[in-house]
Image 1 (cartoon, helix red, strand yellow):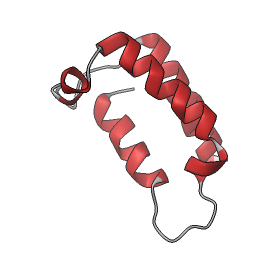
Image 2 (spheres, one colour):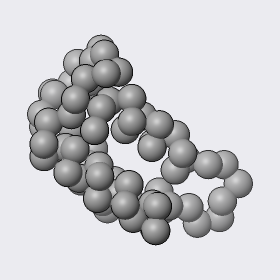
Image 3 (spheres, one colour):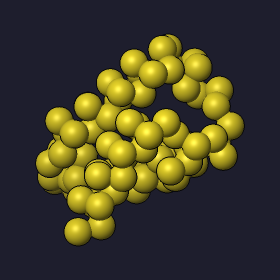
Length: 73
């Protein structure tokens, strides 16, 4: 999974107007992903400066792909 794919996924789950959205239902999983990104990259500036075509490290990609599968279901 690439940075751009994770960004697209994040934007798709943040749809306005939902009373209980995916991000609410899977808040714990999303927080785990966020912490994995912070642990790997350190500060937010490092994460935001990555080129969108950068492949995510396996532990982060695995968590992101798990969430993507749940979203697609």
